Length: 232
Image (cartoon, rainbow, N blue to C red):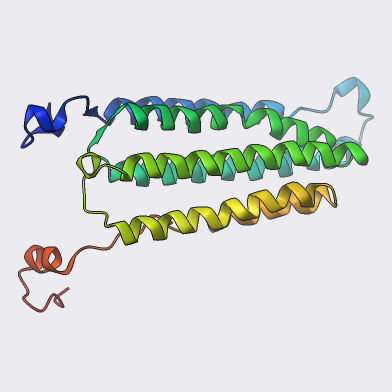
């Protein structure tokens, strides 16, 4: 196996290539993000008087808002998942199960999205719907942190150097988002629309690279051939 060249059988026992994990994960992300659009309904022609189509479409703004936020969330999860696995050379069973836990949440996101879209403006029921959505986002954030911990716990799994300080810094950045996800559960019982807006802001936060890794100075020097490590 190409990914295991240069390692002895004893070093790679129980380990396997990450390629199948990435391929399977990409399939789940693609299905989940596609399922979101199925909740965007066309106003029934028989129930929409002539000239009222624009108004009927406008009344469905909660569905569009929820779709947009969840599409952004799943898209950013996929981007960051890709970033994580760019650093992975091999995987073991704990990583496989941690990845499955993340995919379990991702594949379920269309349900709370549809629930919130349906009840976003439904008075008291909107609070419960927003809380369910927020709980799903919190579970997703915790699953992502668990995956990062599973990957970085064993240096043999990594494609590149990730030192403990860098790993802890990335985990703190994940943790900050999880704190806000937890807070949105409380916000759900105050204002459901504001809760969805905060989730949109959190998705934008995760647009930025949370997995920045530092390259040791001696490796940077070797890669550039510059003893000062300053040459571009």
